[in-house]
Image (cartoon, rainbow, N blue to C red; front, side):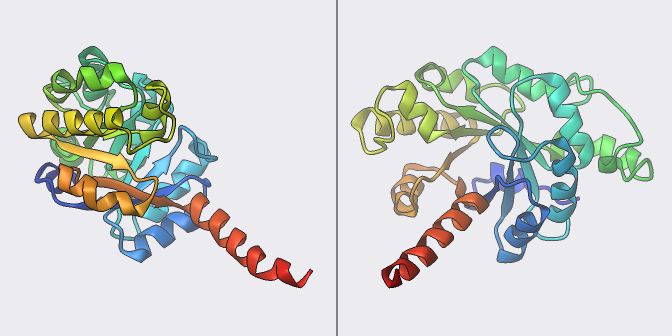
Length: 253
């Protein structure tokens, strides 16, 4: 298994692409393209747990380890995904330190956490590598919590201070909707929120992350201190590609 937590906490620039179609083939394409990590979306994406197995297997073929966004901050969801061999988990809608602590504890074995222990899962080499995996898992696995509300922004410093939380990852669409400035990512309130999250991460030695609605936001957001990015997705690439092809064809109709 490949892990990226150390690189993320060093605040290296890390570019990931999203797998939202439930396809192992597009996951393999993401790895082959050279991305630093793969974002497998099990919150809004089309795939479920059965598709996730093959997606994580495909990710293991390349150099872009899988970070899986689960549907909700519930402990059983974590262990199901981690046991398959995910390198990290992204947790949606984390609003306060208590919810952040639950996420961090759900990622970890005792005494630091509450993750259930089994020797048989894929992550442990089906039992062959359990001792090594168990000894290192709490340090290797990446914990990403999503900042998607004004409440979460207001609590960003306290969330960043939670031990075991590695990345505060802004969900720009949800945050802009919650702030009642939908998709207005240049609004002064939105920019101020991004700055607050970045400063909280710097203060506590964590990484700031965000999904980029457009690539021209990369430069200003990197300058602001963001280092952990989702910069596109399989669904977006396919939809945009088909749209461009049809636009070129329809003039002949």
